[in-house]
Amino acid sequence: MTRLTTFAAALALTFGAGAAGAQQSWNMATPYPDATFHTQNVREFVEDINEATDGAIEVQVHSAGSLVEHPEIKRAVRTQQVQMGEIFISLLGNENPVFAVDSVPFLATSYDEAERLWEASRPKIEELLAEDGIKLLYAVPWPAQGLYTNREVDSVDDLEGLSFRAYNATTSRLAELLDMQATQVEVPEIPQAFSTGIINAMVTSPTTGVNSQAWDFVDNFYDIRAWIPKNMVVINQQVWDGLDEDTQDAILTAAEEAEERGWAMSREEADKQKAALEDNGMNVIEPSETLVEELNAIGERMTEEWIEDAGADGRAIIDAYRE
Ligand code: PCA
Image (tube, rainbow, N blue to C red; front, side):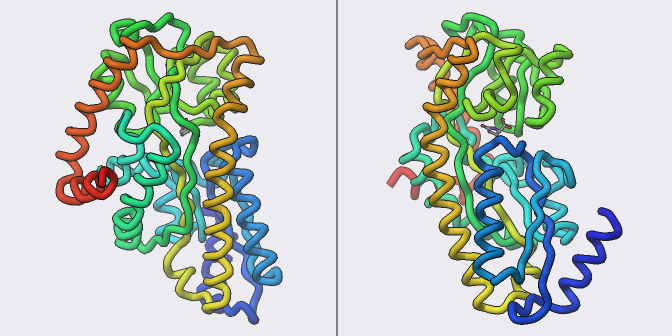
């Protein structure tokens, strides 16, 4: 943390939030590039906060891991190095499997299912974050995840031996089950990881494929719609507690709007960005029946594994989701 941000955080603490009082400058760390709809939604969100508080709260957004790298963002919010952050929820799956529920393959693959899964899992996720002094503001999904590769893939056997980009514990486990070698790579580093041969395949959204110019590295996008993972936007609890009620209400209203806007943006993205992949020369392919069946079988196995890992909390979430 720079000395300047430490100082700003200390100031904020000293003077509290007083909407009518001192104006506050906050920092927010986010992991994804400016061209991503999530980042654009975050920027609208912080503008809304600024307007709703008559300029009392100004949030500077540091995108693409530029101030804090993605794996450190949660800690940075907890320790108040930054006041707010955006995190890919399932990245925290290694802290508690509950965070990984939206990345379990083939558990929730449509937006309607993803919405229900979010409703079923949100309270537990809020509770886990609260244990670390972090308050959840909103969450927004990525479009369904598809497979990028140069190979022709008709069955899971065709995946064996690929160098696979993982982005959380669940994708590493998926790679293991499919005999692929996994390396964890953050979005800003995807092009370099492909060009240096560290990876030659990945599962991610059409959005991230377009942002990474996937056509420079792979020919095929298999639209397997494997899961719909989410980002969440969070704030340090102490910072939150220092705000007066009007300011808190203003932020909560802006957060609700950002959540709604973000889900709508995501629903629009899927088709738009698949078309962009095609426009740039990629083959957008419906997976074969065999591939779908085999991947679903792996999804069932991973769902069982997840329920076992997540224990009673996991069971309760799945029961609520399936009700
Ligand atoms: N893009 C992010 C998370 C999921 C997605 O679609 C990534 O690839 O890391």
